[in-house]
Amino acid sequence: MMTKDCDNNMRYELPEIDRYDRAILRELAADGRMPVTELARRIGLTKTPTQARVRRLEENGVITGYRAALDPVRMGLAHIAFVEARLSDTREAALQAFNKAVRATPEIEECHMIAGGFDYLLKVRTGDIAQYRQVMAERISTLPHVAATSTYVAMETVKETGL
Image 1 (cartoon, rainbow, N blue to C red):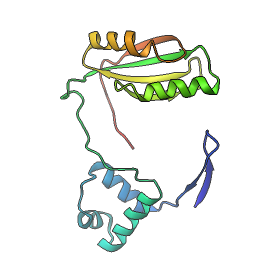
Image 2 (cartoon, one colour):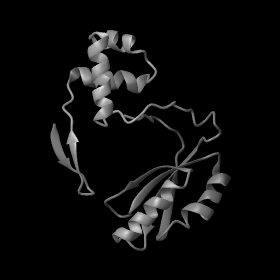
Image 3 (cartoon, rainbow, N blue to C red):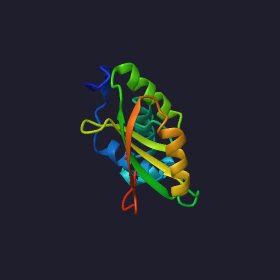
């Protein structure tokens, strides 16, 4: 295993991942409910070593869980806005307060700290522009230490996938 420093000064052991592991990850990312016998067939191994590899990938934290892939449009959440957020305070305590509040806001689908002209980029998903306006006014603008925001509304999603 390799060791890697992360931005919060924690060291993580990075497992060695070979072509079979990559094939397992690719197949499970497409269908997490695939039976292990089918997975083994697709990657060219037998069932037992395939199960052992999946277990190792889970134990090493490469596979963090399994979940249903949901269609947000069919759930009435077709409106996507990207929000640049600038904070009034970027000391560690302020960043932690902002991060905690973001995690508690269900409409914020993604949040990334940015090195650039603003501090965070948020992906916000709502039903429509009226609902977005309400979320912006009552939730995003009131997040800790938010000094300014800029909104960009997505007109079309061209590609949206996980790993």
